[in-house]
Length: 154
Length: 311
Image 1 (spheres, rainbow over the protein chains, first blue to last red):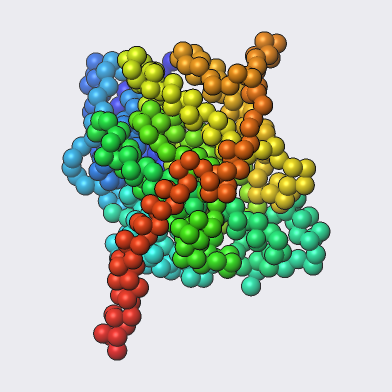
Image 2: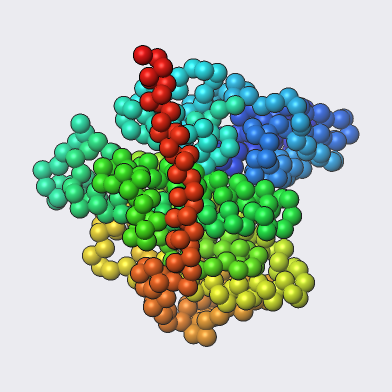
């Protein structure tokens, strides 16, 4: 039997969806969830924003969210949309997600023009390329420990 | 400076105990060479794969799959970039030396990139069968890889290769559900790509394989290959396709499939750069390198200029 109010349970369901690029890290912690509307008769509208437009994982993430919300007791319909605005920014990533990205994926997050700290040794890194394998990540190296670091940036 | 080991026995005991080697460790030379050769081949294969993928951007049907191919091209080239950096850090060859070796036809890349993808059906077979084979091999390396920098990069590569496979599966389902012309095209692609995909795993691992002993690979080639056969034979047959292996056998007791005898000659030819499309592919990659010479020149000159301006 379900517990809690419907909006809370739907929110928990959305938060249970991991980013396919970072298994174990919730899309909510990455700041992808922008709006969540639930009517009393169980119609749910989820508004998501992409880290980068044209990200190849968008359809996959929307499918996962739809499936998770659909499984919530009391939900009648689910509408998942990618919104054109606002623009996603790296400061939407929570501290929890930042720590997990550094620890589990050696991926750093760059806020503004701040130097990027190497996830392994903490030294400032050098940018090698604005683009890496993903559109949302640049490639840096660490001059101290030689680690090749990917850096998520807006 | 990192750690040192008094002897190979000590080093192997460290590896057997689950030890992870880092770039500044004083690793035995034979280990350094073996890890480097493995990473270099992986990097070369990502680059050659990325160039093939790029060729298909304009020819991919539908916007959704076109976007996926654009992203996959960036993934593969980006993976090559990361791997070349990790390889270069080992101090054996620089990134430029590795690239020049590849374009001169001196260094190896995976057998599947020595064949030509002629139809969209071929691309579907590649993203379904070949990507699955490559992913299975990479997962087996990641599971127990003793070289830290490679292991950390592999973790991210594997996640992205997983996307490619999911995309490949979707494409296969679409084509299996398509018209007779599409199904005939895909059967032809299966006939052409089945054996190269299977040969990607390589011949049975030798008893003294250092890649296994030094925890670079965690599973024997034949085990990975058998698992792949076990997965894909029933799947493709359930969609009504034929497996081009007359020696394929089924054990009803265990419901397991075993491939017939494998002819390793085609694999040997690709390793000697004598595959059906080796020469064209290498020439194409080399021409690409030549054409982009001016970009590297501009980038190489840029820091020198700004340093001069500051002074």
